[in-house]
Image 1 (spheres, helix red, strand yellow):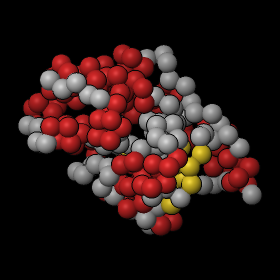
Image 2 (image 1 turned 90 degrees about the vertical axis):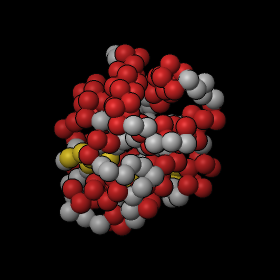
Image 3 (image 1 turned 30 degrees about the horizontal axis):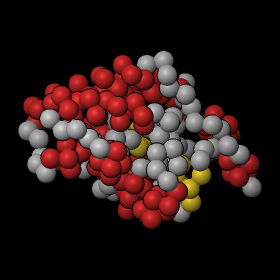
Length: 208
């Protein structure tokens, strides 16, 4: 969802920089944001940053503070990635079902889908608060495929983050990534089969 339906990563990165400094005492570099923050659930990201798994109470407090700050930054600012509506309409018209597989929690998922007005295109969702192992583990995409009654190998996944690509490809999905967050080279190295800047023209690709 984040970075695929909407190019909102800069809001998340800003929220991470502020809350990591405030609650973890860490001043995050761009390298930290690129390699440790993008793609995954907050407790797992905190562990990547600090080397230690956070206690449950602290992880919960950090999560609510960081995601609240993200929503404050993003409110009224979310826009769909170019070509999204046409592509989702094409999937629907061809009878191809889609589900959301995101590290975001229910609140952020509802926030984004409502702002973008695309919730009706999706048959279901797997959110970060429903999995026990977040991206890059394949579990989220295995659960997404199961919602569709399919194997991962029968699914196409769209991702923007290295850990997301690894999660989807680990579940057997073919990954067509978007370069909204990372460069094409980085995403291809992580396991994406193809990288595009947005969804422009993808309906004609589907019909072809």
